[in-house]
Image (cartoon, rainbow, N blue to C red):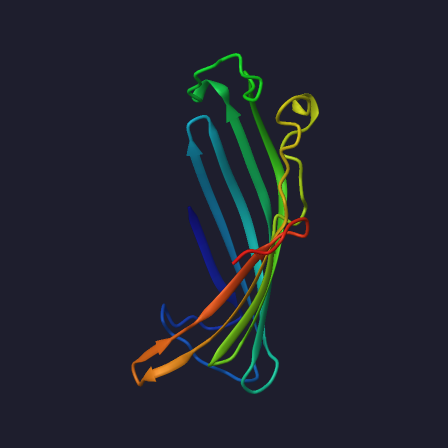
Length: 178
């Protein structure tokens, strides 16, 4: 994959530089591209991202962001090895579908703790439609996923920290998992 990111309206001092300011807000932009192919199945995505970081109190900040982009799914039956070529679960054609995608995230944090909420694939798009909507692949849909996370930063000596955390992942139509 390939990604880029940066802030808007702030001076760049290079990697690793972090200037804490209690009362300033800033914007950030980014982008990402990835492609994954396994046999006759490939996925690629293109995203643009925007984030806004602002102080809530003197020691607590909130960062929120959104990403929007496109996903492309391709299935080429010629790239699949099958033992039974009469299996109706695998179509004998190639199809490709470009669908929009949307996600969000919130990150509340201080020097000693953090909490976050995010959602992905929020549009619940159909992967298959039109001429290919009949048959075994007709129920291929993207499902929204939500993540809830929290943790704390514990000093164990001046140079070492332990960061216990938990993350829950779930869908509205199923239970959460850890």
